[in-house]
Length: 392
Image (cartoon, rainbow, N blue to C red; front, side, top):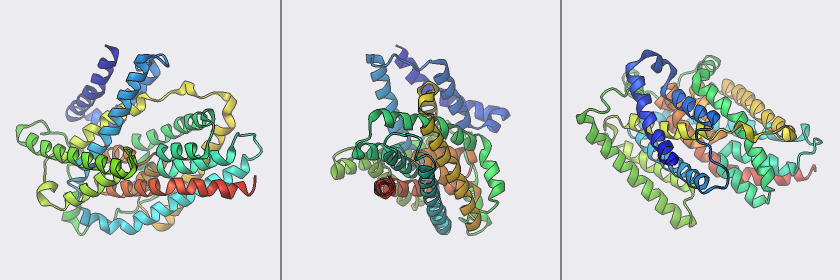
C-alpha cells in the first residue's frame, strides 16, 4: 500500500507544482524544478521512501523507481525538442564544440592531477578509481558502471566512490538549478548564438514553461499527438537497442529518440503542436522528484574520506578550468551550465536545468554534449588506466 501511495505522489505532486506555478508569484520565482527537487529531498531526509534493505518491498520499490526514471526522460526529450527550431541551433554548433572540448579536457586534467596529489593516500585500486571518475564525469553512471565492471573493480570501492560522487555532485547541480546559473551568466556574459534576427529569437524563447492553457480542450489533442510521437520514438529506440546490443542500451535509446525528434522538428505541424515543451517538463518533474528522493547522506562515512577528497578535487578543478576555457572561447553562461550538467550527470539531467534557466536554445547543445560524452567516456577511462599504470 505504501509503494502505491509513493508512486501516486511521484505523479500527482508535479501536477500540484504546475498549479502552484500557474497561480502564485512565489512559486514562479522558485521554479518548478527546484520545487520538485525540494520535495524529493524531503522524502529522502524524512525516510518516507525508505524500505528495509533486502526486503521484497525494497526490491519492488527500487524496480518501480528505475522504471519510472528510465521512461520519463526518454518521453520528455522529444516533447521538449519538437518546438525547437534546429536551423537556429546550427548557428551555435562551434560554441557547442568548444564547450565540449573544454569540458572533457578540464575533467582529464583534474583527474590526472588529482591522481598524483592523492597517490600516496592508500586509496584502493586508485588507477581504476581515477578511470571511473573520468567515465562518470564525461558520460554519467552508465560509463561508471561499464568501467567498474570491465576493470573488475571491487563492488565496495565502486559503492564508496559513487556515494561520494552523489553527495558532492548533487549540491552543485542544486546550486545551478536553484539560481546559480545567474552567477555563470554574469561570469560568461555572452549571447547564445542561435538567432537569425529578433523575430526568430523571440519565437525560440517565448512561452518557456508557460503552463497556462495546458489543460484546455483545444490544446489536449495536440499534446496527445506529441505524446504519441514520443512513445513511438521510444519504442523505435528500444527496438534498435535490442537489435544492436541485445539490451536496452541507454546510449542507443537516447541517441535514436534525439535524432528522430530533431528530424520531426523540421516539420512545421510538429513544431507548432501546443504545449509539448510543458508536457515534457511534467515528465521531467516526475524524474526530478524521484532522483532527489534517492539522496542518502548516511551512505558516506569517514573511513573513506580520501576518496571523497579526490572526488571533490575533480569536481572543483574541472569546473574552474572549464569556466576559464569557456571565458576564453566566449561561451555563454547557459551553455556552460548545460555542458557541466551533461558531462557530470549525463543527458537526462539537461532538460531540468534548461527548464530552470528558461532557455530552450541550449537544450539540443546540452544533449549533444552529453551524448558525445557517453560515447567517449568509457574509452577515455580505459586509456587512463593504462596511462596512470605507467606511474604506479
